Structure formats: C-alpha cells, structure tokens
Amino acid sequence: MIQRSSVNFLICNRKTIYTILSVVFLLQCGTTYSTITYSKYEQIRAVRENAISSENLSLITTRFLKSNDLYEKYQEAPRVVIYDLDNRLVALKTRELAYYLSELCYQVGSELDLDDPMFARMFASSLVYSFTYLFDKKAIPAADPFSMEFRFALETYNRSLAQLVRFAKRNRKLANLTDLNLPLIRGALSMTRAEVETAWTPKNFLEIEVAYDYKNEGFFNQISKFGINTSYPDPQTSGKRT
Image 1 (tube, rainbow, N blue to C red):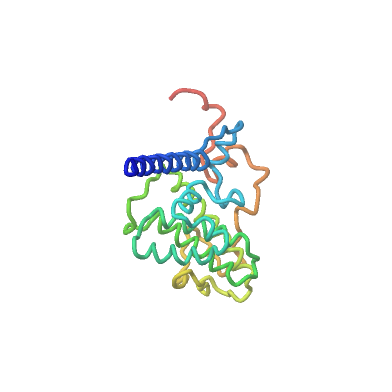
Image 2: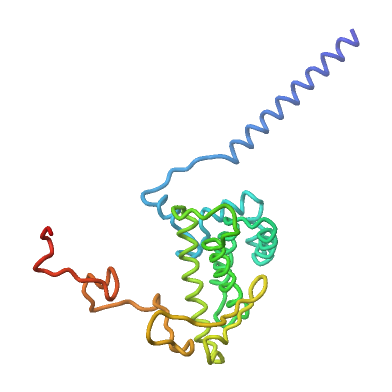
C-alpha cells in the first residue's frame, strides 16, 4: 500500500507539473502573439514609413532588430549596435544587412546637429551602406529592384548625399570639391574627382544646392512633372493619331 501510494503520488505530481507547464505555455502564447485591426490608411502608412519619412525605423529594419534581440539594445546604445552589425556585414556580406545599416545610420544622424562631429560620419556611412545594397556585385543575394528595401535604399542614398552637401556648404574650409574627406564607421570616404554631364562644372560646394530644399514654381505642368528639356506636346497634333 505504501508503494502504491507513492506511485500514485508521483503520478499526480507529474500530472500537476504538466498542467502547470501547459497553462504557462498557453499564457505565454496569449501574451506574445496577438493581432490588432488597422485603422483606415494606417497599414499603408506603416509599410511606407522609414527613418527618412518619419522619426521611426521602417518595419523591415525594426523586424530585423527584434528578431535578433537587438531592438532594446539599439534604443539604449545605437552606435554600439551599428558597429557590431558592421563587423557582421564584413564577415557575411549580405545585401539586406547593408540596408539595415544605412537606415540605422540615417536615423542616428538625423538626431544630431549639423555641427556635431558624428553628423558627417553617420550620413557618409549611410551613403556607403545604401550604395553597397544597390550596386555592390559582391553582396549576396542579388538586389531585387521591385522590393521595398530597394526603394528605401534609393531614397536613403539620395537623402544621405543631400545631407553631406549641406554639411560641406556649412564647412567653409572646403575650397574645392576634391577636398571632401569624411570618416566612416569603417574607413573614410574621399572625393577624388568631380565629373558632370553639363558644360558648367562647379568649383566648390558653395556653388551646389540641394534640390530637396527648393520647390519649382511658374513652370508648365509638363516640365513640373517630367523635368526641364522634356518634349512638350504640340497642341495642334496632341490627341491625333499618327
């Protein structure tokens, strides 16, 4: 009887333990995974949002940080995470990681003043990382021009370059275009020559403006939409079949 009671007691304890574990597991599932309903246009805004269009990171980069347990660490020490991911990029050479780094650098740079020594470093690094995503043939896998990362990388590349032009204009010591030498997260970025496709070549950054800072007015709709020098339809022939 004593042995049977002990066996029954052990079986009951095991059942109790299994029941407790099952309840805990269900509670964890219930608190970790859930769904919410988007309001009107909220899902579209969330998908299109990134560090350029808002103060938040894109869902793509945020998902990467959270899946690698780096989100909270990035909130506390963003530069440490950036340096760690840069080391990972050197080892793995993955294209997606180059985009994540470009957006992280852009967000950190956006929080800095133009006179901060880290301002140019962050935006120059963002420029190089986005360039790596878009054009580096050694990065894997091949770039997908239809992906959201590709569109974001193009935007990050252009906006980072615009920030560097603003920085160069602010720094009056840059007498020539080739005087630009900026530190990166790894290495430095130097401009060795300036080539343009126009008859006029700017001599220094004071002669260059950022197109994002201006809004065109007074042009025909055709020029405003498609740009200067685009062919304008003849009103006498437009609408007629040829």
